[in-house]
Length: 316
Image (cartoon, rainbow, N blue to C red; front, side, top):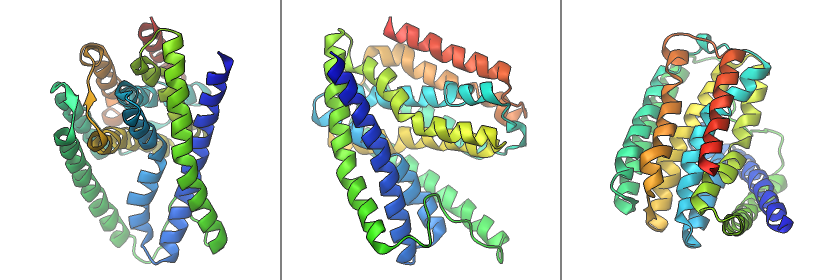
């Protein structure tokens, strides 16, 4: 039984490396072709960093394990708040009182409520997917408008390059990153989904539980690494913005697109427990966003402890 765990871990590592390679290649190719950095940041980088979760969800649906797809998104959103913000706060206080994330936080709450409302239909089909993608388009439009206004106000100052940009990167390396990303993502997703399903059957748990725990934690590792570094560098705005943005994309883009691949039925456990935990974790951010509280080590212990308690309940 050790091999499925090894292949699962290998698939996860492959997914993360391939996603990073795809972002680097796409960003640098777009900038070389004259696409403005603003557009690249709002679209290619955002979608590229969500590529592993998207491929996992699509692969899970194609292999008749839709619970893993939904569990991955819901579990990842819960982990992003409780684990990804909790663990870095144990290392250093995150000065979120200095951040202004109210607008994006409100959008995340709206996306969460919309997602839960659609879940009570019992299935995420192409209709629900269309609603979610419409919400994504509206939020991207607002983000583009705000970013454009900010750039106009800061005219004359050097434009900030998007994540993964390298002006000196040669064309052959750009093509290599694109090929590695496009080849590695489906291979990694296939390895992870196949072996996660084997693990679920071996231990007598559902693919939904595996999605909520093993796969969700794995796909949250990049956000955790980014947030730890941001906390140590006293860049709380990066940490909080990273979590809020990732959660919005998970709900609107990942399930929105995956719903067109095939229907995703919603288990009763989601409607009675997991979705409300996800929403409750989102509401927990309210004092840090609106009341200018810092995420101190005490809060780090509370958030991390809540996540451990959630895992215990799910696995039980």
